Image (tube, rainbow, N blue to C red; front, side, top):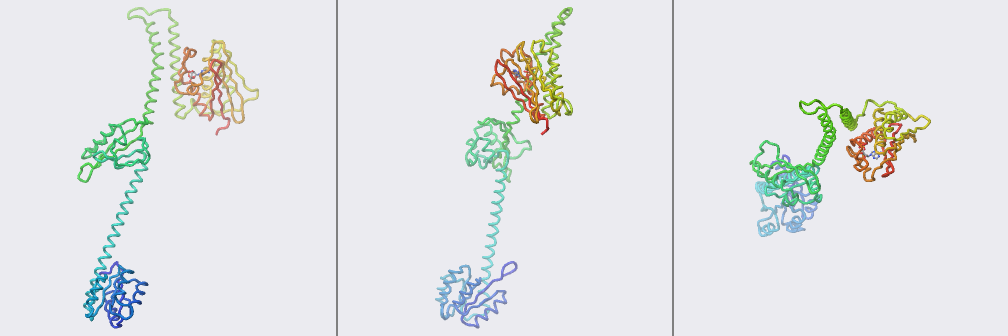
Length: 499
Ligand code: ADP
């Protein structure tokens, strides 16, 4: 037996004859065994207790504890030890009895060294095989543990994926899915696998997708087929399927990956709505201008109509309206992209801004017989660091709205004051007011309240979104208090110290 990477074989010799004990020791040591000796059964069991041997040479005929008794104890306490019984010719029956009790082999007395070598050699070979089997078993267990570790790692990764995963067999049975999928499909977080795909998703397009991928025998190099569908919970999901191929290129099933594309679809919808609204806003004034120009140009060959200055005036107004609409759109897009309306912020005096706004609107107010007033404290207000054009557009929009949504002869007041580290400006009117359920909507792009009073007021629905963007960009806020038929107050708060 080679002893390269294994521990040496240990042998215990239990015999009352000293010569035999010593002889065995000498001989077995030469075979490379590590030998201990005991003169009787009790001593032998004690030696085994202290240092269990691989092989025990046990004399059956000893004074004191009988050899068979020792054997029984050994089998019970050290079942792994190989016991070779040493017995005289006279006790062959006993030897048979010993074999029945579990002895590994027997050695008739008197024996020659060759016999000893043969018998112990057999036991050593058996030991080698046992150890080899144990080693292989340990290796197998380790491989299984590695495999189990690998599987659980894979499962952990699949569980953590932000996209839904569903794996189906060719017959449509789901063998694996992850919590993201359950959440997307509106299922319980830990719904078990094992059912048909229809149990997890009712969308026939996805069933067909899984079937098609399962039928595919080889990847065709193209992008995996995909379908988009809406779940019962109103989510837009994109499902992509890839076949799982075995070593022979045959299909073992399909892996379906689900991505939630709801935010993209919402963006698409917003973009479409935006384009529709802008086109609508552009079409009506452009049609009016076209109509007016057509009237002025007259029929083919006919002289242009004279004396229709008012048509040109109207066309100019509509064109101006269009230009201001496009300007508002550009301002808003600049603000939403994180920029200001004009350049860098500078130190601005709020009184100056408000004075310039009320002067710019005075004609408009006068035409409508509206009393436009400005009230600022006697003490100068703290200066603001802001984009002056942006600030002017805030108060122009608010004051113009106050004028536009007031009946002729109304009152519009601009009032500024300072509180702590903030400046406040209230723009109030005694005009139409806003219905309570519409107040939450007026800061939305293109939103305009449509009622009997407002229908004759032209506008784009972009003024208040611009106000909100500029004010919030300065770290401030806008509040609205309004009562239908009584009037509205828009209060802007601007911090004087940047956050
Ligand atoms: P526009 O004035 O171009 O319609 P805005 O964004 O400035 O767009 O305002 C949105 C809507 O809010 C207006 O259409 C109007 O219905 C309502 N609104 C704004 N200011 C007032 C106000 N002072 N009084 C009554 N309604 C107002």
